[in-house]
Structures are given as structure tokens and as C-alpha cells.
Length: 569
Image (cartoon, rainbow, N blue to C red; front, side):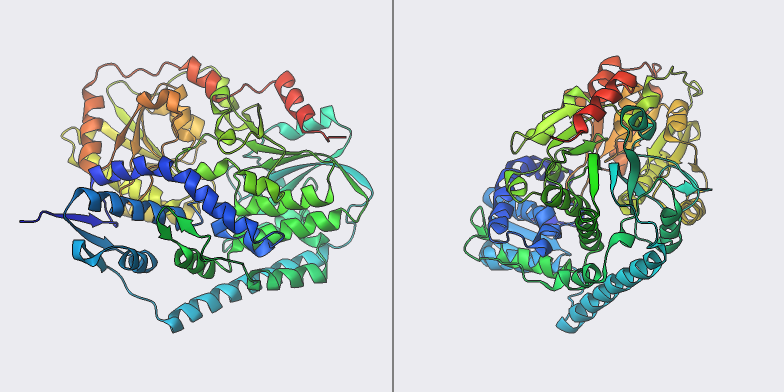
């Protein structure tokens, strides 16, 4: 009798999840080559450059994870006589039916198929939203056309601004609370005689327009939109409507032709807001070049996302003497975020910086995975507090669990649900306290009310992360650099493994044994109880991890970094 093995991509088994994560690094190089073949046929095609597929970013593009799932099906089919597969992704469902033998596999689609009319309505709505945003940006920025900078020497720093009035990354009472480069502007002003400005990018949400007006009013911000002309706005209207050249013969991944997968994603992400932001960035740099502007130095907050590409392309095309310096001021999972290492294909199309700065020596090799781009160590501006004297403020024999939210609210809420269930099931539940640290980009009032209504025993603390770290002895999370900060403070760390995709574990390989990965509420409960039964709850600083991951911020290190960003000529 045949044994039937089941794969439910809505919730993989623990064994399947581990196998899935083992697959990921083996497919990355082949995937990069496939994307590179599309670059070859789309030189100077900005619709392609600014697309989700070209970014290789799993946060924005499902393509890579779909291919990992195909590979998982292939492996399990080779190990078993018969496979039952459940998917809630109709595009993946069609691809598996087309490419695998039906006599050894039964696949079911769990979900609602969208008709062609539904798809047309969805795309029309997305384009309408895209156009409304263009209209809003154009209308508001048109009132700030006076006194635009010209004939000046500038030093520019790319950053992000969140909506709201409190917290890091927000503008409050005319003051910008810099989350990305705290203190950097003061150092730059001492090192160069150029006018120093932030180049802000706003997150697009319901509070966008009030935040946009705040940005336009800031003296040390150089808002991009007022510099754009009518033809630029028109080009942005038509940008996502351009053709992207695909060749069925070139789109081979392993033994599969993935033309349908690529075409489907390019269609559904056709009108992404990231594409608009990148288009604005490119046109801004183009217009700046016609105003007798001399850019003495430039620092890009660099995640190699679509948002970065317009700015970098504009600089490398219109300011050829400017050294584009990218700063990766974070420590995140290299397995999930493999797109952070640029490819030679991207460099050939002027989409990459000239150098990448990381926050510590153990991270120097990560950006070089695909080609030998220059990498340097720069001060860890966001992590200066790690070098301050550390005095723990936790209560002995009381387990205080900190769960930091990432910018991905959905996964953070899922992690919280699992943690709450694990603690509730524990025999020592009265000895536990859960503290939630919200991400600055999250609308705290809405999320606070939702969480507290559902989980009344949970404390939501709006204090900075450093304050919360001092009060806790266990961190549960994933994705965020917060996990690495906990490593430096000697906290116990539990990483929640994904049961639907790639596990995002940011702990550097050298220190991977300092954390444990859990895949279920029961697993999490056992690990938490293990910590509670351990009389040694050490919070000693890990000096080695601190020095490896986070370079100290001082006058010499900052001056050296700024000097490295100055122009080629």
C-alpha cells in the first residue's frame, strides 16, 4: 500500500520547514542568473529596473519562494511514491499541474480563483491608487516651487520618515528624530563645508499627506517632488504601462520554464507604489543635475530594494563623479535577504553603489557574495547605546519576555499569538510577563487597542528598545536586528521559525549556536519552561559579538566614514 505524504503550504510540518530552509541557499545563484537573463533583454527599461521581479526581494516578490516550493515538491516526490499537495496560491497551483506527473501527485487549490474580470478590477483599482498618489504629490508639492536650490554644493543623506508625532523616524514639533543616522549630520557639518540635507522617503499610508507637508516644511530636508516638472509627472503616469521583454527560451530555472510565473507576477505588481517612489527619485536627480548643483558626498540607506534603484541610477547617470556610498545599518538574515548582495547584472545596468558600508567586521563578506564590490566597516549609528554601561533592571526569578515587532505587522502578530499560547499553556504562567515593543512604522494606537483587547495580560511599551532590553531576560522574535542586540546583552534568544516560507534568523553564522529556533507553540512552551527552570539567567555582555557586529561611533570612525564617501574626483 502506498504511503501518502502531504504538503500543505499554508502550514508545513516542522521537518518540511527545515528541508525548505536547506533548499534556499542552493537555489539563490541559479535564481540570480535567471533574473540576469531578463536584464540582458531590458537595457534602459525603467519599468523593468523598478519592478518587483528585478529586485529579487522576497518581501516584494513571491517568485523566489514559489521556486523554492517547486523544488520542495520535487524533492519529496523523489523520496515518496505519492504526494498530496495543498496550495492557496493559484499561480503556483497551475505551475505544479503543468510540470509534474499526475499519477504520482494530487494537488488541490484551497482558495478562491479570481476571474479575468476580478483581475481587471483589481489592476484598475491599483492603477487608480497609483494615479491618485501622483496627483496628490504633484498638487501639494506645487506650492513649494519657490526658492528651490540651485548653484550649490550639497552633501545628501537618504532616509525614511514615518507618519505620526512620536518615536524614531518621525517629525515632531518641527524636529526630525533620526532613526537611521542619529548624530551623523552634526559630524558631516564639522567635516565638510557643503550644505547638508536629508533626502526623505515617506511610507505611503493614510497619514501620508500630512506627513508630506511636514517634510516640505523642514529646513534640513530636501524634498524631491517640487523639483519635478510636468513631463516628469507624465512619465511616471506611463512608466508602469511600458513593455518588459521576456523570452520563453531564456527563462529556464533548473528543468523548468518559468515564463508563466514571471509574466504573472509582472502583471500583478505592475502598479506598485515602490515603482513610483523609484521613478520620483530618478527624475529628482535628473532635474537636480540641470540646476548647477555639485554633490560633494552622498549616503544611501541601502537595502537594494526598488526604492533605492531610481536614486542610484540617477546619480550614476547624471553625476558620474559622485561616489555612491551605500550604508547597511542593520543585521538581518542573509538567507532570506540574499538580494542585499548586488549582482554583476545590476552593476552593469548602473543600479548598484560604488561601495557598501556595513556595521561590523563579521558582515564584510555578505555584500560580496555575487561579485567583488567594495565593502567597508562604518560606525553603527543606530546601535550606539550598546556601548553604554549596562545595568540590568529585571526581577530575579521572573521571566520577562520581550517580543519586538518588525515592519511586517502580519508576521509579528502571528509570532505574538504563538508566544501568548505557549505562555498560557505553561505550568508556571504566573511567573511570565510579555512585553511588546512596536516598530516605529506601526500605527501604535490602532495596534495597541487591537492587541490589548485580545491579550489583556500583555504590556505594550512605547519606550525605546534599549530601555525594554534592560528589563527582560528572554527575547522571542525573528527578522529584526533587535535579536542581535539581545545577543550582545547576553539574553536568551528564541527565533520563531516560519512554517509557510523561509525562516528569517538574523543572528550571524558565527553566533548561530547562541539562539534556538522553534516552529510550534508547544516547542516554544518547552523552551520557555527550560529557561524558567534554569537558575542562571545570565545577562553578561557579549563583548566579542558587540565588536564583531557593531562598530563604535566616535569622532575618528565617523570622520573616516565621511571621508570615504566623498567624490571620486
